Length: 277
Image (cartoon, rainbow, N blue to C red; front, side, top):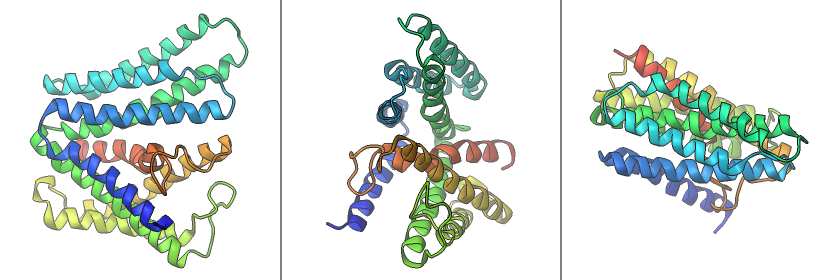
């Protein structure tokens, strides 16, 4: 199996796992699926940090991310506004990172330890929680279509960017961070997201997209997907590794798959919450 086939296989597996969060209208299933992603992603992130030689609190950060997801699901199931409590949960977890550091026997690298621990909580717990918020907004029945639309637009962007970059990529964006990323792939990724938005507009009536929403949100998601991809590549280059993990053949780890999704989730959520009528 060549790299392309491995990448397609791994992408299909992760996409099916994401779709499992969409198909089942069972809070426990949704919570368990989200927790699986967050747990694996958190472990990978902190392993990445430790690869750099920084002393982040791997297990405190991972447990904090699990707590964030659990509380968001519980509040959503009870019909409460999970978005309103999310900043408070994140704040308490961040304060906890400072408190934990007070009990470490040495002060060496305390600044890096606290900041990277909090970054992991923001990156995996806080950002991923918007996928959960989206799944329950404004109800589980409606939320499944929002989450499906978000995943569709992001994956359309990823596919268009990958194939266009592989076939036509000539002008590199930043070879230091990601030698394979090209301007052609970036443009194709934005186009792919817009195409995904148009598919939602024409075929998923429950989302209530207007034509302008497909274009505007498609453009924003396409750009944010590329930023998310580059951001994760930047973390890997700083740690001097090629893949965040070797869990997924041809792709690396969970972070290599969720990179674009994590930054796009809040954008999509706020757009459908405050702009879509």
